[in-house]
Image 1 (cartoon, rainbow, N blue to C red):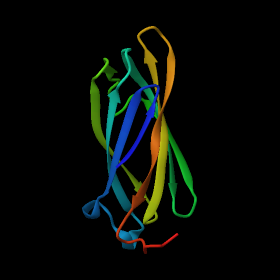
Image 2: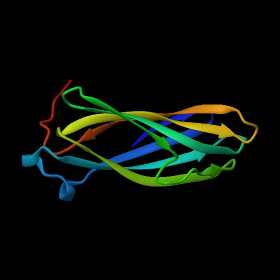
Image 3: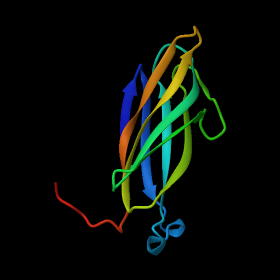
Length: 130
């Protein structure tokens, strides 16, 4: 699991490889990732937009921007959390994702909340010791 806290908003991500949806001979590798966003601040916040950078093992990066997450723009009161699962395909057997949520407090303050960088590893990628 990967976790990061920004402006007292904790984002935790757990990626997992989807063998059944992947086809290594066709250069299709698919991951799902489960995200938990917890408001540990004293203010209510709304998630407005997301921004992802997805990089495959050849260094090719795609950026994804959009409104909300999974069709929602959740409101989180202090102590509340929101969870969702999404996914991404790659043409290589490994990669990395990182991003940010753009949120706003009830008082109108804009917040950029970091999504921790997390590794997309499949059993089709040879293990390397760094």
